[in-house]
Length: 221
Ligand code: SAH
Ligand code: DHB
Ligand code: MG
Image: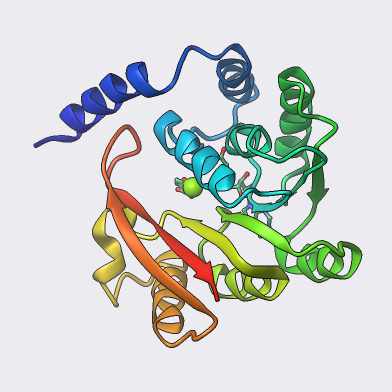
């Protein structure tokens, strides 16, 4: 089956699972208009993040990699009353688009954007935030996933769920010789994960409007 067919099936599923949503569509349109790359999660993936965050009763969510805020809007809507989502974004222009999308979606009061390199911001967030994380979505540069994951686990409560995006990369993940820092980062992450006694984890491949990719899901012991 071809990529065109995967995309058609994704649209079929989206029509059934994701009702038309002005704020989410707005966020994508504004992101496009501002020239941001079209690499947000798909609608069905966004809803999956929403459902997972709901399932753990999330009051404290961390996202690494905001872009225009599409995935963050999904997750913010899953927060329990009084909950907070912190999202980290290195690119100030992306953060500005996201901030305006959060306001438009009515989640501005629940979402905090920390602008800067995630590796610099994570220790600051860990020091500043007392509530342990219930849910996290790691979706920034792939080279640093091992460090992002380690920080996230250390900030999480037992029972927290951590989702890591883009770990298959059109199958390149099984190639040790791509010379691509992103692929190598994912491979290092999956190797470390295999011996990480702090979590139980699995990885699921996906196809659809975003091509062939996949996500890792980890449950903190
Ligand atoms: N989660 C978003 C997509 C994120 S795309 C969604 O699904 O809607 C990845 C984002 O990570 C980009 O906006 C990019 O600027 C940001 N990013 C890349 N490297 C980063 C780093 N080192 N620290 C923080 N953010 C980074
Ligand atoms: C890329 C990054 C992402 O977070 C994503 O979901 C898809 C692609 C990228 O850098 O190409
Ligand atoms: Mg992604």
